[in-house]
Image (cartoon, rainbow, N blue to C red; front, side, top):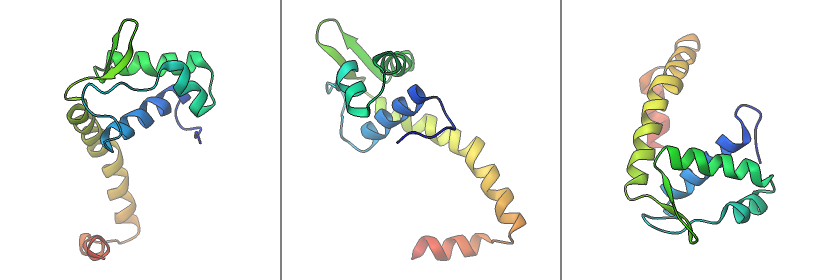
Length: 115
């Protein structure tokens, strides 16, 4: 299921990154072909090509001519690093703003975290 907040190819790239983070694909594992992934997610092949091109530019996957795409060694670490930066710069400031507006304290959050 895709949302309207990001382009579909970016959501596809994010999903593949999620799968790498979850351990579905490890360093140097072959990932589904562009066509396989497009069929799996029921999208146009060109959209999947854009997702794979983006991931390759970001150094997350690489292409072995004639064999397909593979996970770059250290990709999981790089994905985590990029996602942490994004979380700190985008998600946390908005969350803190909402907490302040709603009078939610860090202690309230800690109680929920411990449950």
